[in-house]
Length: 333
Image (cartoon, rainbow, N blue to C red):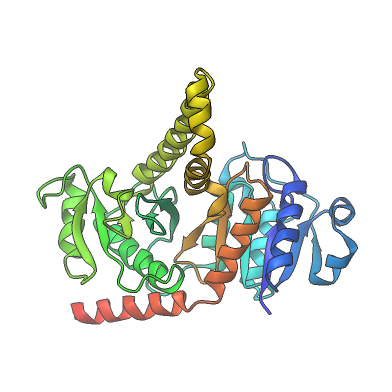
């Protein structure tokens, strides 16, 4: 049975939604939850029937969201440090944290370590598309602000492996995010990356921002600076659209009647753009599994982040990434 280490003290709202999300996950899937934090605070939040599926690792320190990520390396008693080390020491198969994303990323990269051949791990996020049942994967969305062309080329390999092994997309299409579809578009780094990516059978060329949501491509590659702006902008647009619809519906009796008839459509829209449906973002390229959740995660988001960790850990993605990198390296010789 898989063991998932959960930073129970991270997150903007304290341990309550994290515990509730863990209970929801245990109600639907079989796994061993290792809660890292103050057990005296955590145990009263847990129904007695779930205690046999949960163990505790004591932690006396919590890294605040506003602290520098580099502080995490010195805070060995913090909940995130101890949760990551459970994976490093093979006591857990994956770590899930709704806490400090920079600290989680730094600790996972430095403590767990990178896969053989991986230059830089990348954070990937799932995006909804206009095609029913189809998702797209964008990486990097924040781990690497400054990238070289070879980093972008590796992100394509990491993303392709995740799409195949975890998302179960048989023949994923990979695109390079740029300001135009033509090969000549982009900055010097993306132009150089285009040349490297042409060697991949899955590469379809440059894609633009709208292609992320139209279902035409499965994996979109960019650096962490662009990717993080894209992620935050998408979240803002989705939230604004929801608010605009609600505001305008209230202004007209006819619109209210129409909204009742369109309730199912609105519920589908809300589900597609709700980050809680996807739970968290995997850090791909480390020698294990780390899922980075949103600080404002509700119990549903926590549950789905845990499910991501389970699906990742049950796959052979890390083995496939290493094998693919070796194959590409041998082709250069």
